[in-house]
Image (cartoon, rainbow, N blue to C red):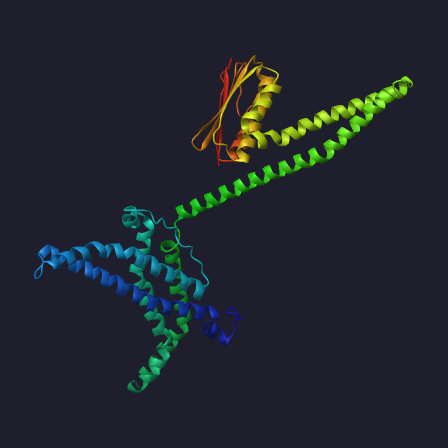
Length: 422
């Protein structure tokens, strides 16, 4: 690779053979021809439109069909500009990619439907930005290409005209031509750099479009993470249910049989066996609660209504339940709704000193709205310590949802969870 930072008498000649120089030169020269094509097409469209409009203003002469032709040309000529702009923009982006290795992402297009397809291209800034670039192309590509070609050909042109110059003028002529040749690499690079900056701004996506695409990408990534976490919880629940839980069931049964068989043995032996049996039974109960907390099987089999009914049945206080979620939401959203209700009722039992509660889960369009109300002492907040509401808010935010809490001192407390069903 050519080292342009090298020093020495030949350092000024190194840019002449640099690949970067020739990439920029070919890019500018190709842009010159493409700008000429673009300018010709836009100029023809403009001339046709202006001629048609001028003829209509002055009044068409000749056959009456000419007036129809003028109207058609006046109406359809502007409609032809966006397709031409998109075509030449694609060619320009390909020029940048092939000759400079610069990738310029194409703006997203909304083709629309019906009449919207006709006027929509003129209602977005993308079309105007691309047209602006093609109007600047004759200056950037045309004039810039002429300057670059002139700099590279200055010395040969000086040799052709050398016989017309003599004396001191002969040396100045060749000196100026040599200076232009040495400046050619930097002129080509400079024009290519300006062209690249302008193209990124006018032919690429706007800052708002890039942010929107980034937000969409992050939303998809977050949805994938939520789905992956939910799938992992299901796998753990399945492994525990089919593996560890079955072993504990077998152990508890064996210890129960041993406890019955050793009923006539000394109390020391019976006490040890009884203690082991009780511990195995307690461990099995805790494991079942843990598995149920990971991902309840009833949620997959029978839906949110049955799963929430199980939570309400195990609650230590009276809970009124109303569920109207038709059609069902996605599994990950149902899981978050289940855990939100479970955590909220746990918080009510531990901290609210409530005598009753109510849970309402309803689907409104593409949103699932869950409302948990209690008649406790109030004062709950998302930022409060030990309430668990922060965890509920984080769970809801993971699927682009939200959580609100209304809990004045003295109660009642209302926790509302908003989730997107998909």
